[in-house]
Length: 290
Ligand code: FAD
Ligand code: EPU
Image 1 (cartoon, rainbow, N blue to C red):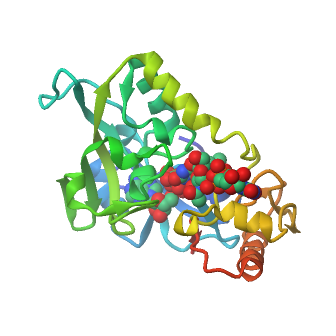
Image 2: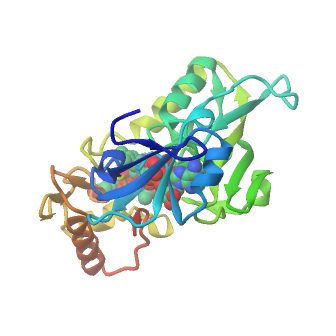
Image 3: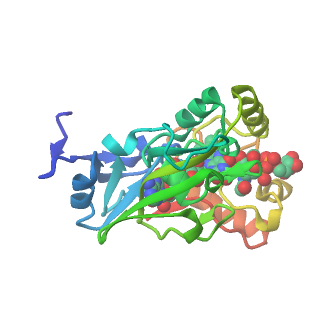
């Protein structure tokens, strides 16, 4: 436990920290962070207004920070059980529970080694499992809901388990309401060979070659009607545009990157510039907190 960390009555680790530390963009002021290890701690954490933080890879957090507490999933919510459940068949593995706080890249490395297929399209998404499920992260090669068998969702009213069939989902969207916390999931995976799974992952990863390697929250806007928003922003002549320390990437125009010391206000100004100059309705993919 660090010097600035205290324990709540149920044992959750509570500290005040800048959210910039927890986001891939590296921007965001302070909030009270509750890291929970089990359901009792999560229940206590949900006892006041809260937000749930995953890998922080789709977030632009305000420079002045947040009033609500921010919950992070640790402990039992960060464990992976890939053993075969009783519903498994010769072709299909239905796993045990995989925590919502498990980093997706590490999970995919395991699936590659074990030759388990269905989530290859999500390779390279720097999310946690819960965040990736919440917005059905993916690419044109496949998405998170392709590999879901069951979900567990916690709210202040209680914990319930459901099947993905009960939830409409689509491109970068699931019907899981905001702040309904995906605590863990069971996966539905097809048994293949490590070579087959690896080849599919490599193919999906190749499509990322043109993406910047700098600090960023991924694509700013969803692709409208299947057209690349990046292409539209590029055609508007906006690559390389800067506000403060934020820049529209010269490599891929749907990525805003932090050159070092960018503020949320810099990013917001670039988002407004894009909307004004592209002149078509663009739906934001990021979340702006608050
Ligand atoms: P966060 O950014 O922490 O949170 C995003 C939202 O999810 C918030 O509303 C948060 O409250 C909610 N959330 C987080 N955890 C949970 C949970 N356990 N239960 C319920 N809600 C939760 N996305 C793609 O879809 N495809 C891509 O190819 C892709 N490429 C990317 C490349 C880079 C370099 C980066 C930085 C991002 C990329 N993204 C991509 C965007 C991002 O990774 C996804 O949106 C991802 O789903 C965000 O998950 P997260 O865990 O980081 O969530
Ligand atoms: N293009 C340009 N200029 C640009 C960017 C793209 O002309 O600045 C052109 C490319 O040359 C290509 C086309 O647009 O012909 C499509 O580009 P790309 O293959 O990069 O795909 P994208 O539609 O821009 C999508 C996802 C990414 C995902 C990649 C790879 C969205 C909003 N973006 O990008 O997802 O990683 O495909 O699979 O759906 C994310 O959601 O955060 C994200 C990064």
